[in-house]
Image (cartoon, rainbow, N blue to C red):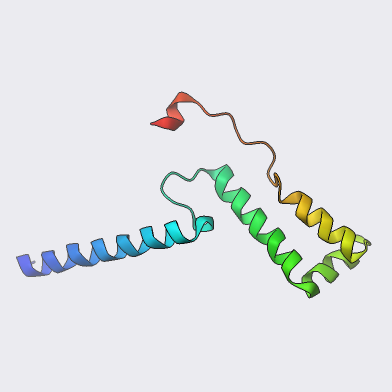
Length: 97
């Protein structure tokens, strides 16, 4: 490879990494380098619950599937958003490295 090709590859790589960093800062649900499994799953569950509450047809489906009223299904989805995956795991000193 010539030096100009290597320089172009490095510039392109930097550009892609900058775009990824921008997306990760803009949209918290897509994670970042320090996101652990619990944080990622919690974001996924909260996004799903918010989507169900925000789409009336999905909320009606959940209400019928669980034999609840729509309001009870909505309140249950909102309650699930508080801690959808349980309490956070205990942090160890190795987590800060």
